[in-house]
Length: 309
Length: 248
Ligand SMILES: Cc1cc2nc3c(=O)[nH]c(=O)nc-3n(C[C@H](O)[C@H](O)[C@H](O)COP(=O)(O)OP(=O)(O)OC[C@H]3O[C@@H](n4cnc5c(N)ncnc54)[C@H](O)[C@@H]3O)c2cc1C
Ligand SMILES: Nc1ncnc2c1ncn2[C@@H]1O[C@H](COP(=O)(O)O)[C@@H](O)[C@H]1O
Image (cartoon, rainbow over all chains, first blue to last red):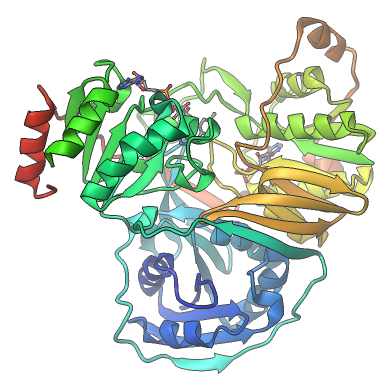
């Protein structure tokens, strides 16, 4: 089987999310990668070094600069004439593009796979991860998004794929990129952080969130996450949200502070290796999944903890 | 201008789903069902656009069992004008839902279709994007803010790194994220009024769409359960544990 992996990037470098997809694709067959972008030569060079990638198709065109789905999906659908499976990371980029590709190919997409069971059988979470479905595809081609935490990352170095220029129809004229507000941060990205400190509604304000959560995260070299309630209340930006409908994370250590543990939140973090919870309610559901629990008022306990580390 | 809002009847988000012992699926007997929470946000957005004078009519559509009428009545009570039920007891996958919606779009000719970003039962996050491809329309997914102006919509999207703003030409697909708005509750008088609003009932056959599933579910199982660990007495005990683990 010949697979095509969507390389996620910002026209400068390959994003980590791509590497787990390569691992999933390698379980199906030969791995080809697609770098669609604008002035994305450095990305193509990097993609060629990913272990296990045989060929990198490069579509360099201003129309692909921001990977708008309307422009990118037809390019991919064309390339699928000579590939059997398309795999994208289950990131906002992958989720935006892959279903559009699937519909163009008249294929039912398999979202967010956790494992490859055979050439046409996969497992995937449903109902906020409260059930795992094993599904078999009857379609001639496969369109798949891959949960990054479920597969090891392929080595970023060591491969020597060939580069092949490809071109598509370019700008479909349906939509245009206007602007982007991307948070610049020295902190590890949530989906690749080894330690995550997350805060919930209990923090009460963005000032308190900053005052209580940030120093602990700094001490631990951790990424910072949040519950939906904390994001909705405006304590932190939307990209901090961990959960069923936010980011799925699986760090070595996840510290949940003032988070109750609703199923939608658990869906995003319950595969963390060690879960630590600090909550003043001893019956909070988060304690049912926590390896280490501390029943305490976070405004006392967290500064004390930060001080003692 | 007309706005079409597809709404799905799903397990209520407060209910903890239980996997059936025979591995055939999730037990939905006697379980509270509600409108998919993202679809409430979609309905709210459509009504807001109408109230702002950007749209004249809001049409809600649902594909599902007869009981999905209740979901449509909720949309009507919130303020939608009309509803269409495409009635079927079969499982309808996102691709087939998108194909049916494409037919409804042909008939109704809306300028905007506003969907949820994700149904909380199948967690697919596909239907809106697929509909966009089938219609050849632009799409603005995961909307955080929506501004409709003339023949285009400017939409800020929630993406992994922050926010991205795109402009899509109308007609267009919009899928909504959690922060777009706070859905209103239906008031009692509006619930009464909704009973008199028109609801058409159709079948997938009326649209000539083959809804045969492409995916076969071989098994549905419980995820590995995590058991509760221990509670520590105080911060000092927590620090000691963290040191043991090599975290601190
Ligand atoms: C469609 C949909 C999608 C959703 N997606 C997500 C998602 O992706 N991610 C997500 O997180 N949620 C999601 N939710 C929301 C979820 O259902 C919960 O509402 C949310 O997770 C609650 O956040 P929280 O735990 O911060 O707040 P709460 O549930 O209010 O919990 C606050 C906790 O803080 C504790 N507390 C209060 N004061 C203190 C103190 N001084 N010291 C210590 N502890 C204290 C309380 O005991 C309580 O346990 C979604 C909901 C819906 C409907
Ligand atoms: N059976 C259905 N009836 C009406 N709308 C649906 C149906 N299934 C999905 N949708 C719409 O598509 C969105 C995304 O669903 P999904 O792709 O299944 O995650 C939902 O939020 C609804 O707006």
